[in-house]
Image (cartoon, rainbow over all chains, first blue to last red; front, side, top):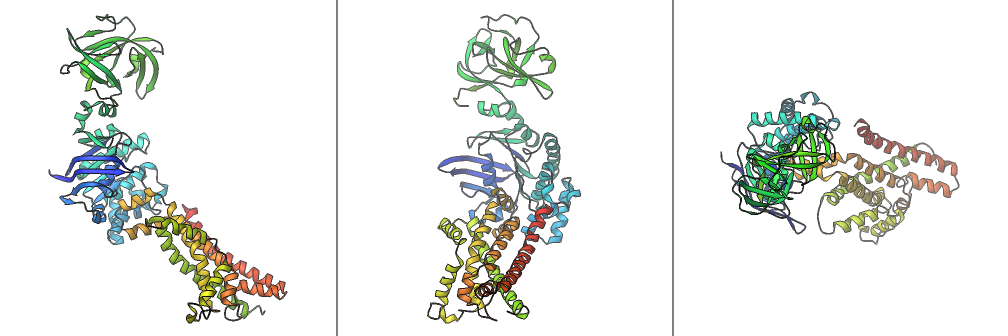
Length: 367
Length: 218
């Protein structure tokens, strides 16, 4: 499928500071593109530019091959649907809110209301049509926003953190319904989120923005499994990131972190690197002495490295337990409760780090 | 003063002059308020400061200014409006307009930028956006109407100077009260004051009901 939205040489400067610089980005027709990044990465600014709500940009944007002209922003906006994190509603009924974008486009009132009702039913709040919009719960309000964005049958649906103001149950329900809706409609959509798991569930392709620049573009699973650098890794849940030194040894390559040598996959020349590890990849073993290493600091088997660590904190985290270690290296581990039974701050625990779980990145200060 | 037809005529003229001045101030004040709240143009802050200062404009100063303009030898003397209800409407409009513009600008500025962004994202044109924002700010705008009407129905200085308190022509309740006090007829002055208070309460009461109905229901 061809690109529905294309961006070339985009730059947004505010207060003398460049807050966004995107060389090239395409959104293919029918795809759901995830736009992820930490707070302040420029993702909302990029979405606002796409939406025709941020006219102060340099560069070229086109939708369906038609360039976005700053004098035709209204016409551009009328081809899109936007859902914001903090949905604002008109001080009227739910039905009139959803009918409003159609009314703005000159659709007669009766027809606008009929179509609005259809969309309210589709997003599951048809029974609230006559209610004042301002009394809706957070989840209902986001459903209203979704119906209001879709009622005009837009070319592209832009979603700016649509779940972040919701509690966990409402978020889960809306996410599932949105996924179903996007699949059923086959609509082109751009989803902005700081939460990679949301994007993983809804988008097939992901763009990672950091510091106003694109750091990685790829299939969502690929970005999750193989983040391009330490910054992206942190965003996709690789919480443990240490500066390290790659050293060659008789059994293969190792990364030396705080004096602990961790076996790593091949392909990295000796020198300074950063090593990352997801907390859920760490294994904690029951009490007992760790197998002795060559230098006494740790041990290896073919698939990873063992060492002894000192527990700093043990706290429940959903169905798992988060165990933080501070010696010999700062480490977060998410383990099943059975692995943390009896563990207390100050205890010594055996730690296993599978080598295939380690991400090795080129050394880059500040990431 | 006969408390029948004359009182009715004075009360009617009071409502007509102040009502018309308020209506004109509403139209002009909304345009100015919208420009101040939503526009970006050179001199916007200076205009805002003028409007703010104008909200405290003394009616006698307005009366003097309008008199100088409409006086037979003044620049607008050829209109022959001096000592007519039209002159009183002009003077009261000048008093009400900054109140209306300043308070409606404040009401529109209370509507957050995220609401504006949302309505724009829904595909609203500039006029449609302004309509949505005025609806959103309608309680504040009604408050501005109440304040404007209150400021003109109660003023006496400007009406006295440009209207002249001519019986049967330009006498309104405030100027009649002053006259009755000067004559030492305090009982009549008190009765007229009660009528003025009643009219003010009635007129602003209707606006207050409109303003609070939406608030209470929300």
